[in-house]
Length: 215
Image (cartoon, rainbow, N blue to C red; front, side):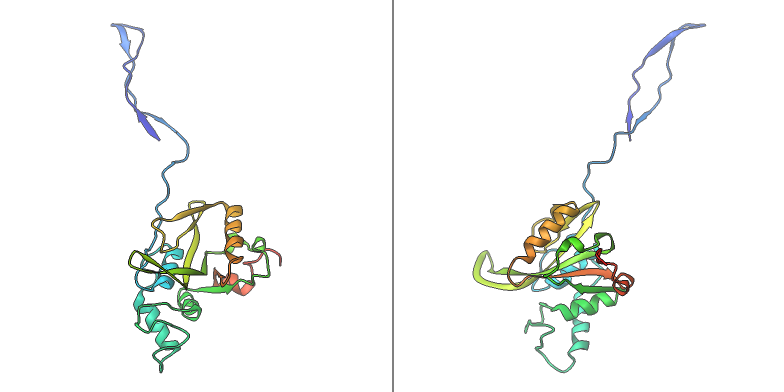
């Protein structure tokens, strides 16, 4: 709504002659706001893309912390320094799917691995909190892009009726669009080599398998 200023209009004749119409703060409905919704987008630090993907999907920078993921890693692998659960020897991140799944369970959610032999058209989007993709990504050394690739976690979710790519390596959230455009995006990603998709769903949705629409 917006307020319009008084126009100082005049109306008819009263006892004292011309009578001024009282000034009223008119309110006009101008339709839905065109201001884009506030989107939480955590940027890349070290090798903490799993942490960034989780927080971006939950749209909450306090949903998970590096310490939380580290504690989960140590619980999964208490007696070894380097294990499949965490590939970074420097302790800077690069957590794998086991850590992500365990982290989601602490919030009452599950990660459903998507079988790429199935079409994403059978995903019941209304029952999915968000998506986490594992994709190959170029390595960088400062401003230089190295001819090497490592696996990288990215988050995707709907905000304000629009799906966004919340890859922590992007400068800003990248709009994907409506559900049809999301499915097109997911199909394109899954055609790539070494790409995997996780559906982030509530425990109830996972228990009843209602993340799929084909029964």
